[in-house]
Image (cartoon, rainbow, N blue to C red; front, side, top):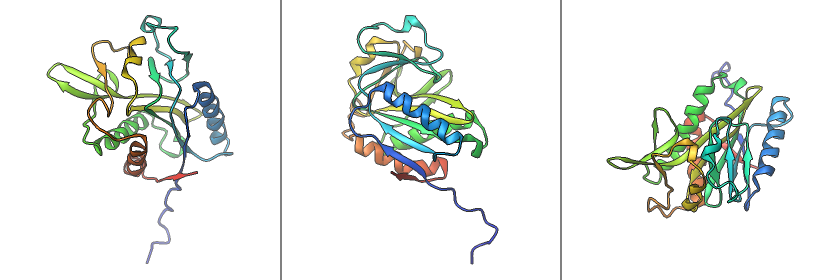
Length: 224
């Protein structure tokens, strides 16, 4: 018999998988509106899987000197943390809109959980992604002196509601990163599942993310 005083299970988090390639400004506007609606109680928490048209975005720490080819793709300044990064076809962007007022109001833990989520999802493809002190994102060792970035993390929090999130390279054109110094790190490169010899596509990455979300956040993702 169940305990009458046990807490009810946390409700699922809404999941939206955006079809096609979404222009970055459209995503930014939609996230901003959703974050406000979550704060006021007019909308539920949501995780949004997106694939963008090619774009460079600069976070709050972006340095102009790290934008090498400013005319190559559209450039947008954002309110997320971090420096310059690239979004484009073949990259799964994961926008996470959660109300941390219900999750301990712990920003550091939230970022750590995002990293854990990506690590677990990539692990399903036999990829060992690791944190590095002083470097944001997740890294894959490629030899004695080489490490390549496979996932970027950049979040914004307003009224304890999170938005922006992370980007995982599935099979993007890695040459597109040459127009920036990715996340301000020039000593290392970037990689992807395809670059590592993994044939998994976007749908497989989505399924891995959906399957591992409860392991980290203790809730399920429910497609809408």
